[in-house]
Length: 178
Image (tube, rainbow, N blue to C red; front, side, top):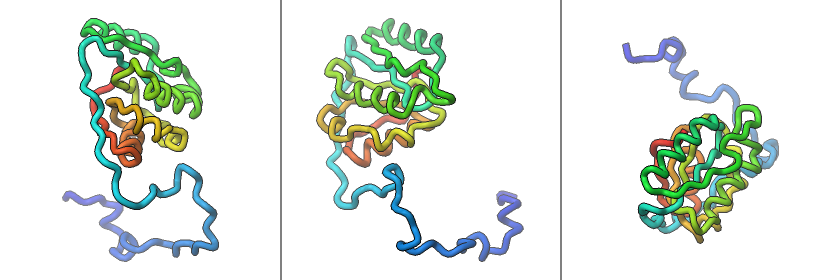
C-alpha cells in the first residue's frame, strides 16, 4: 500500500541509477536558449509590485492556451463591475493549434502588458500548455523596470517562476480569468 506498483517491481538499482551514462561535454550539443541554466550568483533583490486599487487597469493575457471569447468577455465584465478598467490582449482568444497564438505573439502580449504604464495587474486567462516556450522571448529587464503583479497557475507556473528567478518580482499563484 502507498507504493507505485511499477516502481515496487523494479530492483532498487534500476530506480536509482541511470540506464545509460550521461554524454560527455564534447558529445553534448549546446543547449537551446530555453534549456540554458539560469545565471548563477546572488538572487536578485525582491521586488513588490504596487498594490492594486479600484479604478486601476487589469490586462487579460493568454501566455499559454486560449480561452473562449465568451469566458474572456465574462471575466472582463466581472472585473469592470468590481471597478477596474480592463485591457484584453489580442492573442487571448487567438488559436494557433492548442496555443493562444504563436510563441512570438504570446510573449509580446506579456511584454506589452508589462510595458503599458496604465496596466497594474496582469491576469492570465488560462493555463494549459505553452508557457515554457515563450520564456526566452520575455523581456526580464523591462519587468524589473516596470514591475506589476502577475497572477496565474497551472502551465503559467513556468512563467511565474522564471520572472521571479530572473527579476526578483514577487509573482502570484492564483485564480485565472478564463
